Length: 161
Ligand code: ADP
Ligand code: MG
Image 1 (cartoon, rainbow, N blue to C red):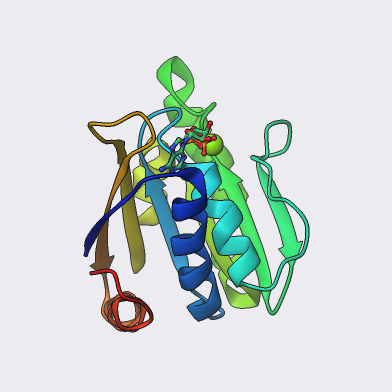
Image 2: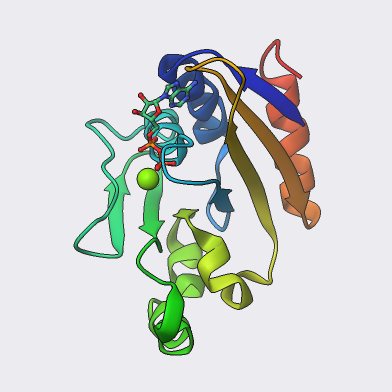
């Protein structure tokens, strides 16, 4: 599934549709450079999951937990890169994402920085800047059975394809 959005609001609105469909155990991995719109999308996902308030990227902690219709865990692995990569991997493993997924859904920014940790089922969303300033291209790929169903429900939940 691919779509373009023309504004931060558009990206949030799409995130909201996804958030409304999330269930316990769903893992969403967001790829894309700084400013691509990962956090903006996550805000929409959080609203769609029934979280009130604003989702900020977890800068000082690695994980923010929001309470909505279900617990939503928001991770940002930006600081995991470079020389400490191996040690970082251990740190990400220590986060026990499997345990989070037993309780709720999980959205991860910069998941590619700890790729081996995320070998299991997930919905991948790659974000990139478009031709115009406020345009973003979103490409969604399902890895696993449940993500395939989630993606098809998402495609059916709105006019965009
Ligand atoms: P990331 O988390 O990927 O680094 P952010 O969501 O924090 O990105 O920032 C995206 C920036 O791009 C914000 O300043 C936002 O206002 C801007 N922006 C402009 N157009 C869009 C769009 N269509 N979708 C998302 N963000 C957009
Ligand atoms: Mg971010």
